[in-house]
Length: 241
Image (tube, rainbow, N blue to C red; front, side):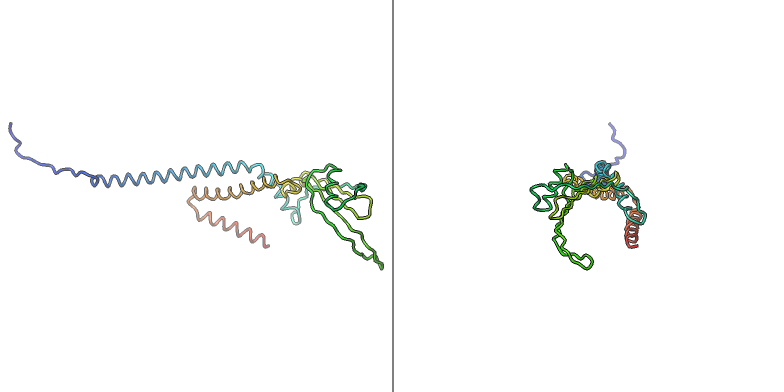
């Protein structure tokens, strides 16, 4: 066998972690970017779901409160929108044999006798006091009054101590007036109040998640800050005018 005329020995290939360090750094950077993108995508998906489900929960109540809020905003001049005239009826009921000890007792009796729905509202007890009548003075007897309110209407009772009857005035609201009373929670139970609390909380969450979604999906954050500032300034200016 003849050996080759020349030998070109190759330098040994370096082994160990240093030979692949640049390549590994690139891979690590790509993995880090992928993880960040994956986390951001997961966060956005979760945020959209939360925003959507909260919006679905408050959608029906949002329509109700948006409409009634518009009517309440225009309940007085300027730009007044009438909700219709209520129907009023009056009657006199004979005083029960046992009488009443307090105005609240009269209210409970009234609810039982007339089978009224709604909550017992404010009660008033005005003590007897002298009043002028021309050039004379007379003593006005003690007066009791109580109201039973509901979204559909109200019943007000008035009793002058010493009379043998109770004067009752019943007011029936129109449909639009009933809707605005639902907005205000007039004569409603604790359950309705708690339900409206959940709706108020959902509005707060919708606002927060909406702002987060906008900042994550839009790069023009300066425009968003300008819009928020402009809306705040407009609200302050319109409120002071």
